[in-house]
Image (tube, rainbow, N blue to C red; front, side):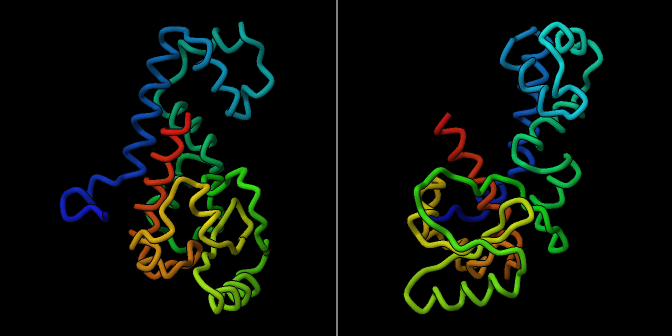
Length: 188
């Protein structure tokens, strides 16, 4: 069932990532090894050993933690994550949240027009979804959507136009990003 009114406004993936950054920052201040290890998502700390990571914690600010959670979602930066999660139609980098080890074969594309044509063809046989993964595009069916922990019959897919890359309603994509983040949380 789709949340209505005020509930819908609470489906905020940006707020969720800010909470994750806050928890990471708290874990770093406590010297938690798992939190320290997550710092390796930052390019400047990718090859740092454990003691070098621990030495960095006093200098780390919330903005560093925001960068970490953005990288963990496959975005190149926090600023890019904000643009994507807010529904910016100009982005070409969709992060890696729509990745799952599902065993489902998908048709992959570099060009939107080719992906859209394949999507239109697949839709003749039933539900089909045009999705973005980093800078690539792929076309898939309901089984893959389910493997993401999402409902293939969620009304937000129709609002989206079943097209993640060029959605009819960008706010539907924002809500689906949030639902995907929640699905990942449940599975970890």
